[in-house]
Image 1 (tube, rainbow, N blue to C red):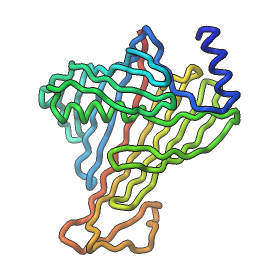
Image 2: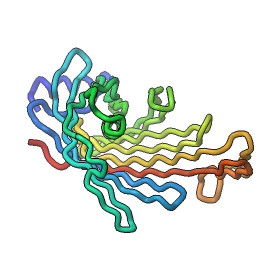
Image 3: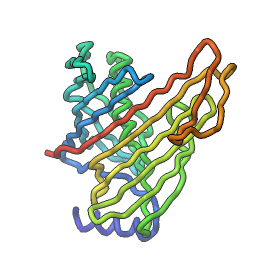
Length: 248
């Protein structure tokens, strides 16, 4: 890191302001995204995406990056395997903007991309989105009201200073329309670049008219829903890992 950048980083920490994470200009950063989804305990599908991120432009407090998908595969425990099963064109440009806090503010996609491809790319950049707020303490907490597909949701953050960087954990729980438990752990190196992410989303949908909640918490700590309506309770658990591979 250049001396000027180091001085600026130290000044940010001293003032306890927000700091966005960093993709080094002039380099392409390669990652692997692996996500396993389990619905009703029967549909265990793993999606693996190899992708890269490169710096495009900086304007004030915002940074523009390009996401490029190198490969997309899916497989299951029963032996199913497919390389880009729908043979989508994954090579078109996809840009996204990060604010200085590290949250994704908008995405720009190619008009000819299929909706499923856009959703896939949004899922990847959404995984790296987090409000990174630095503190001079070894451990600290804060909250952030953030917009996602479910609307504005309140998230709780816990930060921890490590010898090789920072670990940031983001939590969310809501039960307004569906029951959603969200936990994302991001590991940043000393330059603020993401090295790995572990994300778990547990979503339960239910028939609000005929469903009742009994006993609040179940033995495993999760809300248990009993439904007597036409539509049964459906629980979906998604676990995602993003791992940095190299920059070049």
